[in-house]
Length: 427
Image 1 (cartoon, one colour):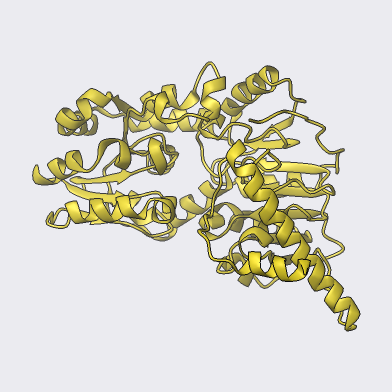
Image 2 (cartoon, helix red, strand yellow):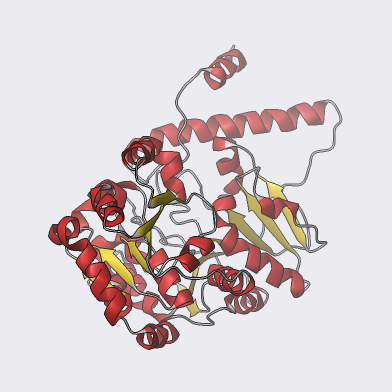
């Protein structure tokens, strides 16, 4: 009777969403989903035992002490250089992903033991049962109340690596509360993380500045595939959700720039295609008649960043990728804090990216963005200082272009420390 009920519930149609923000409304849903996934997984194991089948190991390699956990292909630029660096060290490690199309699963090496964890709730449940003592991920909020990925009881050192250069203020509340170690792109990350720990009475994390591995990939792509700059080209790259410029500002100001003779490349955040496709379709229709506007949906931003002479963005980390790799200027459209409720920015006294935006270009006040954007573009292109950008980059980012090797060396030597005993309540 119970088995029939479970099967009916499992097969019942319903909406499925790929991401759930931490919140009380998601707790019950995730408990039910995770419980059903765990039960079905256990029933599968029981079935195999009854009929004499071999049960696969939970982890892919008994010699692997290090595991990398990825949400999928969208984060390949962070994990690919780390995987290659660990292979070069001849270090056995596990690679787990929630994406069956993740190209990292195709890496053929005796040192890389990769595994697709499963679709939906089952994959997220399995992610919370990994056995390796050292687990590195770029996923925030692991272990938080209401978040679908739990921290495994067997994880002794949960290590976070950033997949962008924005500071923790742009992460959701509780993002690193259950991490033991944080690998920082630069020292600028330390102060806001310590401030949050003090305000929430968290155990102090181990923090080490080793750089951002995805920059290794972007820098190598620039060097391997040179593409000439168009002095009249503007790249517009947006965050997703309420803090994204495409939602905050619409497309009228971008169309105005095209009508004034600029070439525009619009690059939405990859998550926009998943979580706000109606918005993207609407904006594409609005811009359909503009010959000077094209859209970029490629995973890598390299070609568009090479072609553009200037970037217009919001709070996105692509601002610093563009400025630091290509030494070209950025216009940041103001996004008010009210558009980012539930982010760690509410708990830090100073947001690094606010002052950093002035080192790489200008900040355009919201009231002026619709009317004076062309003037800001022209003035910035005329007056920006590439040497100033270079100096700021060198002062901000550790191991620029060589972070992956440094992180691989560190992972191979860190002890499997006791698990973080933080009991922070994340609402």
